Length: 438
Image (cartoon, rainbow, N blue to C red; front, top):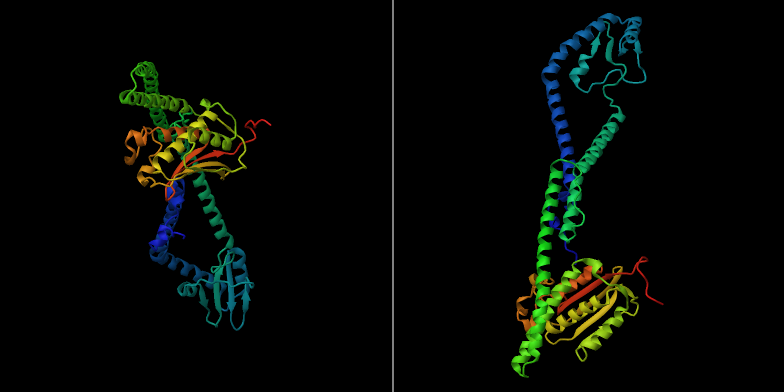
């Protein structure tokens, strides 16, 4: 079912979203509206001026001039004098009467204002019944040159193009700031925003760079502190586990070893997350048969569990970090089995959107829409999974996201109704990537 646009639902037309979003386009539209409004006001004011005082001022002058021209032609009209006037002045003369029929420009009308008052003002009648009509010789009153309209349109289009180019040049630093903000939001602080000009937008770029540098320094300090604490905790944790192993068998010893194991896993996940935060540089790639990796992992760690495999045989060897992909698949299967409520779990691989997809789906109750957006954040667990025995510590999906992004892929989560589906998309092998051994 096609959902109509919001404008159609409300029964009124709206500007396209792209125009409302683009400042450059809105500046050009504002310029055009300003130009059209200024032109309209100018012509309206000029027309009003000519239609009142100026017309009344020019009328007696034109009347007196036409009277003088008619008197010079004489009554009855003298053809030689009329021809001399046409030669001397840029006027057109037409004489109609019983004794003389003559037009200085026979191929067209001699005069033709549409205003009856002006037409009467440009006509004179002689005593012997001749009518003399005067007009402009070089340009007819009732004609407008067609090229003038096209020239005006071309000039308007040229002004529009110039204003668009200027607006684009003026606001080009916004594109750099936008790209820089996206890089900073993704955690890439390696390339600062280069200010193009020393104006307000240049100052804004400098301020964004300063903010990014401050954030980078703060994040580096936090990561350094986290790594230092994780490393320092490993030694006493190892000693505590050794001491716990020396205790007598019993429930307290098992509980202590279980807690120490969770602390060890937590520290390991924290260290692994910090390594993967470095991106592709942390990977140790090799040619990996993803289908074979999945089969081996399920046989080794999930034997006897209700897991269905639907693996695409066309999947080629991919240039991946085997250990990190094992970590990702193990975490996805563990989460699906833990939160699926004992329902079957399906793992499939398939071609998708120019790459390859690995998806794990359970048949459980799914996740609330608000919580779904936050899954994958460090230490975040939905309310239904707050206990450590059921929900872990909230680093599994976070590590999966880091593994996906470091391989140039993405991790997507959606409610599959029923159940939750988590899928990894990996780009197809490129010609530059090393190929699998024969």
